[in-house]
Image 1 (cartoon, rainbow, N blue to C red):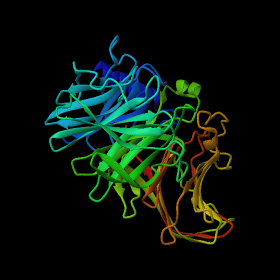
Image 2 (image 1 turned 180 degrees about the vertical axis):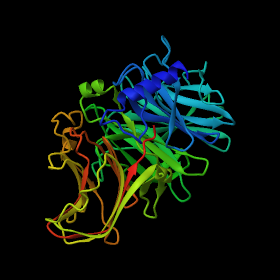
Image 3 (image 1 turned 90 degrees about the vertical axis):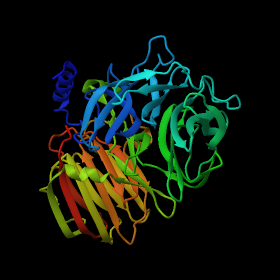
Image 4 (image 1 turned 30 degrees about the vertical axis):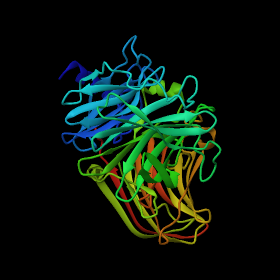
Length: 493
């Protein structure tokens, strides 16, 4: 065992007793993590790169962390792929980007700061050692006709190939107008020509949702009948991260024409997703799930930031983006408890009183109701002092995540935006009179997949070791649960 491997094991052992540290979501052995970067399947193995600070559980000194997996689930930590060069272009940090296969040669594109410029590095056959290009910066500033601010915001290259030509999109802002995605092309990955704006937003648009003042972390997905542009929206003026959205439509003649748009994921804790296409043709997405607790609590814990579970991305006939958990996750299922044809009443017994856990997978199909709201409570203490409630409001057709009693610690969600500290909402309609919830509970992480289409993610920080219960809920009437499956999940470590 090497010294590095011993350190990793020591760090994992030290943090294993942390009641909030996830057991089957990926995160580094310690310290800070944010955006997923450079997702690629290379020689059959999945490589996950990510923004990483080796100095501590806080943002700064950004490197590219690196992990590799044979099954999308169990990850091996590898040395940092990119390290800022003292006195170099990226002295301020190696920010987000992507990796492509250039005829057997891995090529990595990233944002160097400050100022924000596009750089490249080439890797060895195992994607472990990287050499920064002498041609850097490949793109040294935004186009002259784009007012991206002072200092400018111009980052997160996403690269793909069509025929003999490489294309790159980059996120930016246009002062007074809103966010934008810019398009470049190249024949050799070194010399890049600006083509023009691929797609731009309107900072004054409010329906169906606001797309903020700055766009970043773009992804372009090409399906058979539709193209999809995924964008992360940031409000630079308020210095507050918002959320990620998508546009479905057509990419042609170097422009993107939007036909439909939507919020990619609800909840206040998901941002900066990246998508890769695996060797089987699937689009797989990871996103960063940040912390809700204070910076002081993160420093005390020794870690901050979690990667979402891998998700399969598709588009339905209505142009809506759909996400489902990768089927590989089923191999983590352990002991199962199943229920069928349950009638849940407002004053009925807690039928799940014997089901306990803080690392669970739950599938529930609600098949009919006379209630005003129904759902389930999880991470519940026996006396109900702590619990998180997942409730569907029938009249409003809205799924609620109620965290008002998620933690007895009043500081547990101090870092979250004020509007998201207690109750978060997601619009969703029942399909054929049914609501299907697929919930992954992993200590402080909650991911909910609704009707095999929409996703809601959040973070919770219960304080009591006995806050592990589950309970079905029905308010104002009865609810029938056609089936309910609960699996205890194995740790990936």
